[in-house]
Amino acid sequence: MSIALVAISSVFVLGYLAIVTEHNIHVDKTASAIMTGVLCWTIYILASGSLVDVANLPAWFAESQPGKTAAELATAWVGHHQLLEFLSEISSILFFLLGAMTIVELVDAYGGFAIITDRIKATNTVKLLWTIGLIAFFMSAALDNLTTTIVMISLIRKLIAEQKDRLFFAGIIVIAANAGGAWSPIGDVTTTMLWIGGQITTLNIIHSLLLPSLFCLLVPLLFLSFTLRGKHVTTPEHVECDHSFKISRSQRNLIFAVGMGGLLFVPVFKTLTHLPPFMGMMLSLSVLWIISELMHRHRRDEVVDAGLHIVSILKKIDSASVLFFLGILLAVAALQATGLLASLAAGLDSTIGNIDLIIFLIGLLSAVVDNVPLVAAAMGMYDMSIYPTDSRMWEFLAYSAGTGGSCLIIGSAAGVAAMGMERINFFWYMKVMTPLALMGYLAGALFYQFV
Image (cartoon, rainbow, N blue to C red; front, top):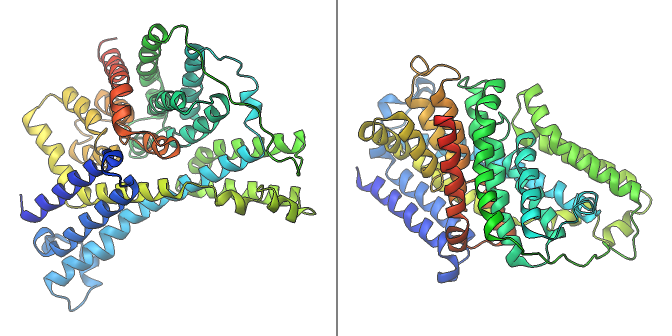
């Protein structure tokens, strides 16, 4: 391995350590993530002359850069092609996140979640865990694990007063959302990748992974049913949204219906148009925005003063979480662009050999490194002539990559969103939630392999 690749790997590891020890070093994880991402790409482009094989660059790219030396071509390939290509993928995730967070915040500002929370009367911790977990599990299959996490954490803020209790429920939401997304073609990015790539089909993946994914959630919930028996949560006091600006029940219900309907519409839009999911999210946001404007077209100033205008809502979005996503995804993209992740996958294949064990380990590895590039590397490594559509290998990969990320808080988009929204400490999650997530991951994997 070249010095440049060692340097990139070292920066990533050090950045990762800075992220997980943010409370010990007193540096916010967002700053560490951004610096890690930028430094990884900086080292890569400075060493591009030795890392990029100019002879194997696409002919169209070489033709578009006439008169450039080999070193200049390598630099242009990294800076003008690879970085921007990865940035387009990352940006689609960030805009999706921004759209979903804005819709959820607007629904929340109008008190729309009361439609759900008013029907959940349980204060018993075990009953509430089962209720929240199962709702998140099935909602994730219809939406996706990221959107579901945002919605469900907004819900538990209305149900649970104590932040230390919400942390526990947020962890269960991450496990449930990732498990629910694994068995649906639109529930998780990696499952969607396999679906679009032709490795899996809709009905087969639902039939094959529904029960293993459900076991991934049920086993931790059953364990908690014994350990948390008799405990209760404190519910927050009801606070009116704004006493100077009254929202009618019909207005609240309309915003809730359009907001939730817009989120559910996103996978439908993607299926019909084949456009990226963030486009559907932006369309849903624009429709909700227009409806909210028309609803109060004669009282605009009052709406702004009450904090109900969508411009006011945008100011409430957790920008730090969005920037954290940008930094960590840039860092992982550098590992993928340099071929480090592909080398890791190939190393697993040559040293271990057993395909089921390799896939199981890829799932665990996705708790440390983003599951999207890992699945992308696996899709490139394994030929469909050997593992055809709906092969058990592809099914098990969908399960493992979808649920294995729950083992660490930064191992999935759902976990990162929860970490940002509830300020979850990495080591708290590792101590409290990782054993539960591992228990569920192992239970689901054994169920798939032997039942």
